[in-house]
Image (cartoon, rainbow, N blue to C red; front, side, top):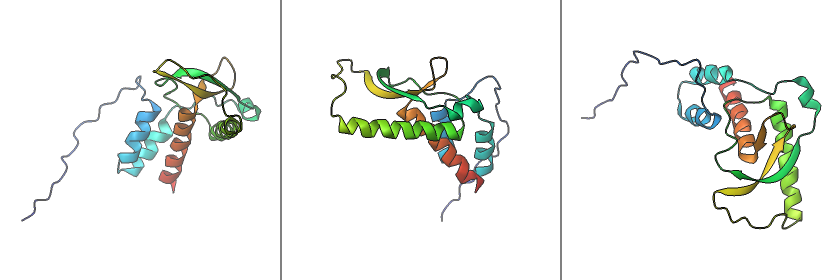
Length: 147
């Protein structure tokens, strides 16, 4: 005889309006949560930054720099147009790197690596390739929830 397990009823939901979740944690949660309506509502409520329309016409700057692995995990998303532009610039820079074999000397610091960093200026946030991938992943999951 097989026993069927039934989940317990949820009696409370804890809500902290002043605490925000990192995008990497939100995406991890969204991928394993079976309730698509809850995922969609949560993703729609996620804070959006850098939504000035003037940024859409600007070209982001790329540079290589030594960064810590824990940096660039934000608790917001940027508009899809900016994400696509940053992704395009990253791909172009990676193609350029393949053509030119060595741009940097090997780093001695084990915790840091030379990464491509994309930015729209000194006053705005910077994104490395993994952060841009998270932003792209956010919009892909949002689109799946909408369809």
